[in-house]
Image (cartoon, rainbow, N blue to C red; front, side):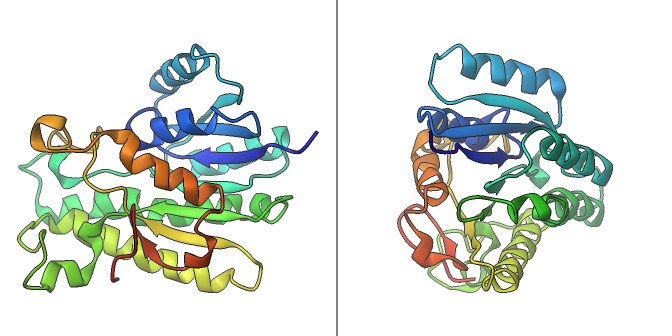
Length: 249
């Protein structure tokens, strides 16, 4: 029997992460490690997925991307139980919209950078030895945002030119550089590394991410992510990709 692809998804108790887990376990050759900061929410998400009767297994991994101790403990758990991981999806994120609005913007930036840029660095750092033991092509997918593109902030014809949100935009721009660095660092190792923007989809990222505000169904932004996990866009490794193409950095 062929080995299952072990996929760790952070922030997977809802939104894009949850939908990615659902789509992945529709295949018997996937094993999803559902990362969740909240054990209660994570257990609920796992139970809901298991109730669907899909062939792929899913299990909870308690993981707070803002805590190095939590990430290290999660890596040890996965190492002891599975001995490897084949793909990491750094999906957990926060936006300034859900932070206390009376908090100074520079404090909001610290929180966004911690979760959105530093967290993915810590996750890959702690799980790197498990990626190296992958029996497949190791993959890292950092879920970014078109809002993190510097060109899309400055171009006169950009649809999101006037979206301020500096705390979120700057943290995603930093994540894009993290992605570029990881891609170059591990290119000779054969790793495939991507920054991926799912677009404006229904999620728990902010109160704006609702269908009533024009957000697309979560599944639409998730299917291309699953394609990345499945190696269908490996030729674009090292790039900032979206659902149908690429964004400028």
